[in-house]
Length: 288
Length: 322
Image (cartoon, rainbow over all chains, first blue to last red; front, side, top):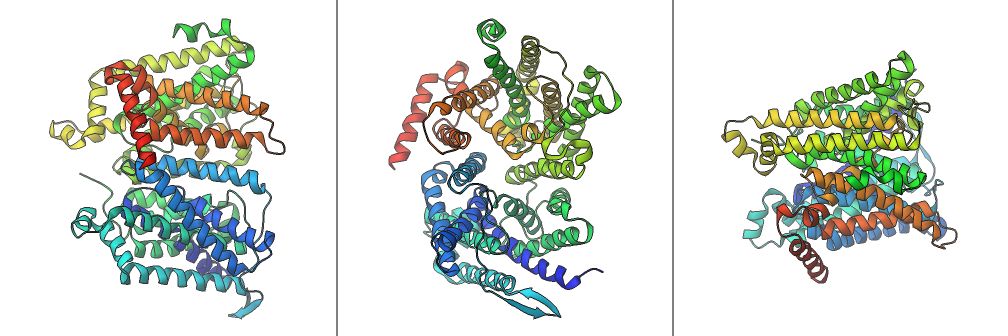
């Protein structure tokens, strides 16, 4: 007997997290036209920060989220100012360098914390009855908070000066320069925002799975599928893409085989890129 | 080249094995460079072709008892065919899209391999792979032959009109189509050829004493990054640069992993320390010498060498201050 309620709950949970991860990735691409392959490490760093604060420091998990926000943002500022700013004209070098820095952080964490799995306490303890099934409160909190973050981001982008500058640069960097927007500041802001949301999604992920130095890689790869499906550079596309990819993932793992985790989204991505490379809401990928 | 040919007389067995593996790696880098360096179509997923060549050959040999020369050729053809099938739809994509989809390809393949672990050996790979020749020196000479053949073949090819067209596609694709040539055809040709050469070199590597058919050697994400880094360090779009970058990258890492064992850091896993050190070095090199060492220093034809390396360093130092 297939447990549709569980499938539905898992779907909403996983998809909300994918959306968070994907939005940061797509934002940096939309604004700077570069792939930030360090994004997965931001997820890991957020989870590690929360683990340090809660397990080692013995403090509240909400302080852990605060620490994750600071670390995720700080790391991306250093990365952007130290490296990316010098090489951002060449998207190949950016992709390679960000991936190499990912490896550096991953190996640094292996030295620092070992490879044994660590845990973050749930955001909210206990269970609630949903449609006759027991659901952990933590899962409900993760879904709700993910949407709070997404909502805050949408308000930030559409309602604040800094956010609108990001939008302007992603539409046309020349046009933005003409009306006096400093592209460098916008790039840096975008990297900070992306780092912060990735780190927060890392805490969420760690609160119902485990924390390990390599934990960010798979969510990042899945977010590739999400952003390609939705269209690279489109926030709306990422949201829709996340729920489609999340559905595919949950359906295959619960109905076909848990071993196939990660495979269907990648195959779906392949099909999308071949049939409709610009995605559902994206800009053209096929030139000339 | 003469120095490389004489290596067996100069080096001990252990070092000779390292140079043997480095020659194969340089072969992979040259094959990658033939499409990505020359046409600018960045592939982040060439390990899929490496694995296809190696696994096809090893499995055909183990299960059907076909002789190695036949299976190696079939492995290379299978890799070339995969390159053609992937290249047809994928090469329509531009820049980051192409990078992302090629990055995905080996990941899908690894999932499939794990799914069919009883045949492919899953994450640990194939344990018993037949060797083409035994003996450390003989293996070295096979690797040396593979390296030389790829180097010569690509050098000749890239000096012909084909090389000019491929470079022109990288510089300005529209100009190529305006002059009446179909860039798509040439890109697909280069992609297929590159996949074929990758499969060939990887199949020979798998059947040597230094290699085998396993995901960690031929399929994982790191392999692709290493290929790209080696090519950039040597100088992309330059056969000699790719060969030089491949050797330098592989031997440099081996050398670094050797000295780190003498560093008296207590309680730290040495492997991890040297890997971090190595990757930091890589980042510094990518920033300091974006054109690559070989192109900047060795290949005099492409501008005044010392001057350009000096300019690069100067630029790097000023950018650090600014």
